[in-house]
Length: 400
Image (cartoon, rainbow, N blue to C red; front, side, top):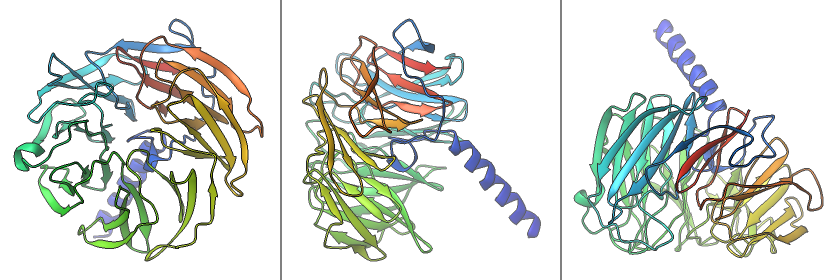
């Protein structure tokens, strides 16, 4: 028994080392958008500052994810956007390790700005889990072998969303947490990562929602926090049981930031709430009223709040006081969420222009403006001291 416990502890330690260098889900570890990597790149172009680049077979609004030496990315193509792609690349060389395709089983109707590859996949040391906006979900191991496949629309025909779904799944141990808020049959489900079967499934309000769940630990319990148009709800990750709910926050597109027991929510600007064991304290700690994210999620980094919107405005405020430090207009509009690391904040607009801002400065200081010249809606990933950026045509690894 002691030997088994030592082996389990070793596995957990190794797993922690893998994830320390990884960006396994939408906006990285627990959707913070922050990397601990050093020596991140500042300047690049289509021909300079690149480690590698690889052509992609279709569009995508999803982000790349990185675990260990593998980068995973999803795409969709075809006249009806019904050809679904999952690809794996070597993180260091850009060599394509495998490419798998699926056929969409659900409706592929969506707003022209998005596509079926809108949900960011999630990965661990064993492989990748890809959810598409048409309700198809598949798990592949690191060698590209299909472990299981679910047509969620086939199982639950009431699912419908005429503008396109985009909320991303998250992993909690051996469970894949799948958010399926839509105009029809809505639910949050935990799927067994080995077989793809439901461990539990709870009904959700029939409202369109693109928010990705957050995860927190309260004592010995792991909670799933999912915001939406009807409020914020916490679910027990083991049973799916509702633990508490709050109507103080009502989001639908950007995902908030969890920092310990403080929750930074994109409401009225960015409002900070104190979490307790049983919910949200009614009186907010503060509100940064002028930090107003559009579709991108807000960013908390080095004591500052950052945001960008679809009007090309970037904003920054002191996270302790809510005082606005600056508001600036940049080129284009933003769909990708800002990410940060190594004292830099990266604002990537829809045309592939990335403005790198000094995160340590109290005023707006641009370090570089870099252009890729391709449509870019997906949020970058950070790992191995590189940025991984996907456009509609190409996956770029930027940096040393």
